[in-house]
Length: 264
Image (cartoon, rainbow, N blue to C red; front, side, top):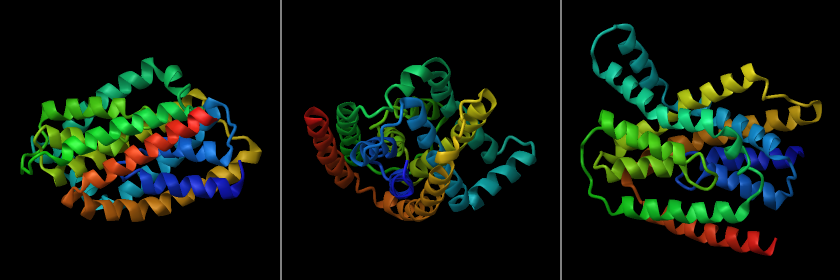
């Protein structure tokens, strides 16, 4: 992988991680356009590293919220922070199950299957459109809601299904407050990404070759910096919840991806 390609893919990951347009789908499209011929395992490795970078940017942006949660947990009381943490754990269960039992099948989808990505982007568009029609409320995320949102997050492990789009849309369709839905969506993925990185390191799946070390490192930095800007911007944008615009974008890119995949 060339350094220029790594920078472009890193920026794409950082910007699209927080926009409801599927960062994994855009990474697959970017790799296809740039001519990346990595085998699925290597392609997934680069994708995981970039997701790790955006997870760090999420921690930086939500550092005050995270510190509040940690302080609340250290009190060892039945407080709001404990409840929020339990909801995060509940939301992780579906994705953990998928990751443990369907990891090999999932990896095979990260090998340039552009037509599949296109169809998944159209599904993302439908979710965003329906969510945009939902009424605004002030309802917080409940424990049962957390599990359903977790199922949406597990489905979003497919390239082309937006994780933030799927989780925020699902939460809004369940009648939750849009701002609380966005906050929960951004924070719930952090433990999963760090868990995935730890699992891969312990299992030896993350093996860096000498020629790929520099491009992957540069891609990591690009994703982290662009992720900081995108996350900060999305916090204010999601409050207005103009999801229809993102739905139209996903439909457009989805159809283009299907056409590109068919021609290719």
